[in-house]
Image (cartoon, rainbow, N blue to C red):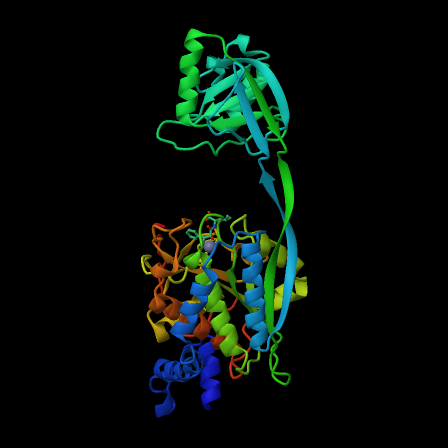
Length: 457
Ligand code: BES
Ligand code: ZN
């Protein structure tokens, strides 16, 4: 039997029960050595310094979707892909964001000095009326006398929706809500469709002083919310394609993804400049490596706004492309020195082709990787279209998650390198020209046992 035939059988997960000659005496070892030789074609080229330097460059400033910071990152990523010789495309899309406009409050004729912020969803408008304190605004607490007045409400116990609806039902003309015990600031609160009432948030201290003032005098307030509403913003996906070898095309596609946007107040070194750097490193190496599979290297925008970019991209795929997409690998938060071990998450908690390939590649280049159940990243829209997809991430999370302290000094070159190697080896297991096309639902190569891990985040 040829070496190729053995590889094919192992790739399909077939068990060799008889060993006709010595080459087959220990099939997993034969397969492992062959696979490891192929792994080396990718993983030996991975540069820890390049991986780290890209994270450094990307995490100098926040990359919130729809801002100049994101756009600069997008241009950098596009330039990198192009410099590797890959066909690269920017895919713009719009998403909606709430703009709170400006809010003001006059109390008994003087300007209220504390911060005032409109609720997300608040209508614009100006109301002049007496303030009445209605506690937590449960139905029992609200007196009929609230009609035509501005309700002063404490945050907590019941949802924003119920508080606003309860005062609306009794005819209130406006809402001022102060923060709950131990909660800082005045940036909170939602009104929902049909709750057409100006609503603002203030700090707990400011709210309690109004409650006190109401005990000794009538308080007339002038509450104004103006310029609030949704605005359209533009974000981008960056898509680089590596075509298969012309004479050796299985017709299959593999995606390797990360998200380039960060939260507004953080530089997102780990979340997810780390994953972007992993995608760029594999793109650079694989651009010059013959494959029989089309590779799509994609960085998504507006992940932090609700997976907007990946949902957009997945919605643009034809059914034919979906059918041909064998696997989606998502790298998100792959480099924190302070996070736990690598885990592969699927939205339904089931193994799939991606986790099979990842566990098997892990066993060859580092250690067997476990899997668990989680959405919360760009693998979800692909999973929902029926594509085997998994998120590669470390858990438990680092304490700097979504904070201004998610900076380059917390990034480990070793962690970045290990995850990139595992994903690279897993991708190449299908993409290399000597292995056959894998049906989407079929199990991956290698008799590796890996466990479900219900790991806390
Ligand atoms: N990198 C995180 C995903 C994540 C966070 C996975 C924690 C596992 C544990 C991602 O960028 C993120 O923050 N996602 C959002 C969800 C999204 C729908 C806005 C989240 O988890 O809050
Ligand atoms: Zn993320």
